Length: 321
Image 1: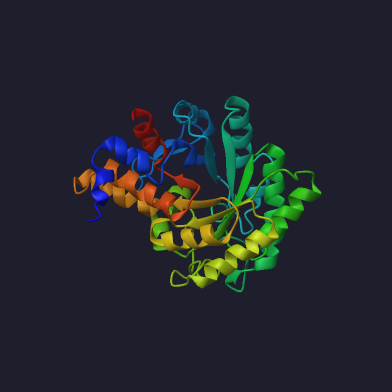
Image 2: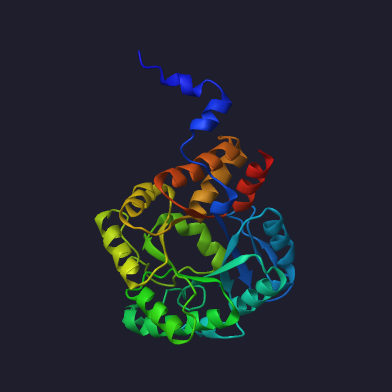
């Protein structure tokens, strides 16, 4: 009789034969930076996550650094919004200020910026609107201006999230032509039009004022299309390919891992976080174990990098072991 249980008998043997490990080195922690002062605002739909102004951010960053989390992903919430999202390329804008602040005061922390427009436009869509839809090529012009501004502020990596066709090529050319040839791009290569983003829109004030984003984000029903999208970004010069969301798209993470010789990232999004937090608060699940199991499933699927609001909680668990 085959007795596979022999290798499960004790914790030590389970450790020795364990195929996948979740580590602090896998984690990126998202941060919401709001323009203003004295802001430390709870996001009700995302327990434990807050918006910070620059003058209140240090307490959070101190903890991130103390937990040895290697990287943060910045989202900005400006006071001024317009049709074009012009604050995204304002060299004195909130994200540009945040980059400079973190690089000056926390130089070992790796800073990644979200490159998009939804938090900055008056209509909440991810680019310039013509005829009630995002104008792809007009938006690319502004994406180039945004990434150059981030690069000049000192960002370590840019992460374009809008699913606008041609984004990676536009960004790579813009960075190379302005001397930022060594600045990497983490592409939201496969971003689905998902209901799991709901709490994020509370956090970032980014809900569209009309319609939805299904004309530029992917249909959740499609799997083969994900490989086409990732292939375009790979060919255009992406350094890392991301899948978003994570838990409902583990098959897509594995598809990218099997087909591309690049690091694969995934985004454990706000709705996934909120569901576990809510069920944990109700006592319906063991929140810590479900958190760790869900992130381990992303590693098992093939993710090298996990963007997650659980980053601090996970780091505390791992540091305890």
